[in-house]
Length: 295
Image (cartoon, one colour):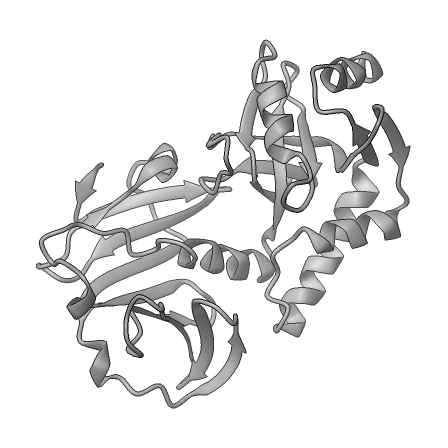
């Protein structure tokens, strides 16, 4: 894995500078995220990482949200504070992220007692990287969608949206074998507006197929997946499509402003791009079925 004091990662045309501010901490970029490394440039977001003794920290801010699992969000002294806990450790958080309210700068502190300081680490490991992006997008940039996304041989983007077990990974594997097709992700896609139209972007947050590509494409079709006994398309109206999209998106639901932007953004998407419910049989016939409709 690449090791350095500073990396630049670009996802959906948003560049993050990730750096250690602690001589004893070495940053690494793992797995699929390496595909999104870019050359040094002016970053949209700066993430700094350090070791710390988090047992000395007392969180006194207002708790905004509790995930019920790993993370909690607080507001304190004009900053956001994400705390991360695990049942594998005691009550001291294993990591805390202090973030400006515009999410342009983040300080990640990792509890030294839980780690081997000789080992490099990725300060944004799950779920922090996606949490940062979901908030950044909700500030007026776009939305993250639970979806498989692919670019066909003509350069058009196709989005297959669905919750877990809906068939995203199956669809990705079927299309992966098609000539000229690039699968951007089999699980998470980011939507943004570019050139006054919706575009889709690959992310490093893949599913079981482990398919991840930093590419992008103008969005041409949206398919909401449903298992069926035959391959069939049902056109969806804007209100229905927005509801389906929202159920498969990741806005900060505890932020009225973020939720309002996400709804307005998704409304723009469904009015610009045809949306369908795709009932499908999980074999190559669904690929042939869609090819015939597009020809």
